[in-house]
Image (cartoon, rainbow, N blue to C red; front, top):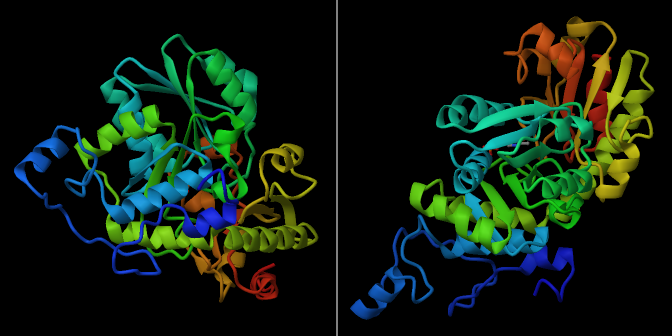
Length: 389
Ligand SMILES: *Cc1c(COP(=O)(O)O)cnc(C)c1O
């Protein structure tokens, strides 16, 4: 099917296996285990001699449909669904790394990923070095003989710095490493890291794949060996598996992903352009703006600019909080990837535990706000921000 049909067709239809009931929409298989026709079949299944379901920690038809559909959209051989985005990153590390291995990661990644690397992987002998999101020579210098993974998330949160996926993939392969890309912000509707040379894509399905803020879930996407065998081997043993219900919600989310990502992007571009013209706004961070330092790269490796933008206000924290507190429509929450627009003040929330110096290094000023632009009427979003501006 993958060779035959375009992205939007795959998003709606890939992976569905209709049962004898003739259901049109995909069914939810809420079963923890499966029955066998005979003792011999049970033995063959357990021995891995016959394909088929055994237990839902390993496989489940609804989860498989979600996996097959997301694999088709990312252009991958394999996908393993996980109970959350963090479980996807953990499963990738546990499936592919061993004690003594080294990770080189962008400094501008999701906060919990940093905690996972530093607090939970480090004591097991997996060390991580952090480098600039955009300076390739910084990455090259940090690579050691035991480096196994390069890890990046692009565009970054909240400043939307864009990393060059193809250049990082080339570097990784020259050094015998694997490139892992967290594709949560753009999804395969707007960016396909595997086509640019990345080895593995991880997702928090919780964000745009769900798209309406309902269920937590995640996925790891890549080739048969790395993902289908190694990451899956960890998942089926350790158990951070996705529930069939959450898989179904995310599967249905994929059907409208492309439409939603286009609408998020067009709302965000209009808002970013409008914000740039506001006298109280110092600077706007959005890869779709000509003023963005990696605008050309973003145009090349992305087919849209996504729904997340940030902006600095003149007047620091006071001015930023004033904008937040004068909203009536936009939700004050650090979540993103929802039909509902959200606003957050990174310096006192997502990045609040960093020291002022660390925040300054990361470019997170006291006047910075991040908006994940939703699907409401753009004029209502502008009006909601106008009061505080
Ligand atoms: C939210 C998020 C995660 C973690 O996903 P969960 O589903 O919350 O576990 C990882 N990476 C990025 C970029 C995220 O935004």
